[in-house]
Amino acid sequence: MKNNDWKDRLGMVYSTNPDFNYHTGEVSEKDTLPKDKQRLRISLDKKNRGGKTVTLITGFIGKSEDLNTLCKTLKVKCGAGGSAKDGEIIIQGDVRQKVTDLLTKDGYKL
Image 1 (cartoon, rainbow, N blue to C red):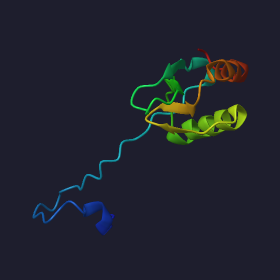
Image 2 (image 1 turned 90 degrees about the horizontal axis):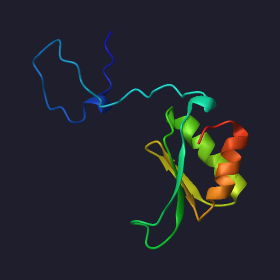
Image 3 (image 1 turned 180 degrees about the vertical axis):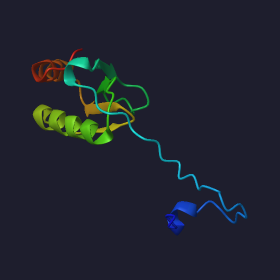
Image 4 (image 1 turned 180 degrees about the horizontal axis):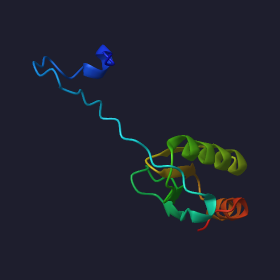
């Protein structure tokens, strides 16, 4: 039996094709690379942030759960706020040196 959840078909009005597959737009995530294979880049960013300074960590390849876990660890150890989305972590303030020390100690390549 086919999955017939109406929420997956919100954009579709009607189809007469019996073999029609509804596309939900979900994209499968890549598996998380091991820490020693990750090539993370740490930079300072002020653009489009109202003059506020943030530390930007880019280059993470993996699942969003692992990205959120790494983000939470960095936020707690740096004592700052931040967020993680689209493969990058944003930590409030200029904490580049502290983030660099934490990531190298944890086994990441920079």
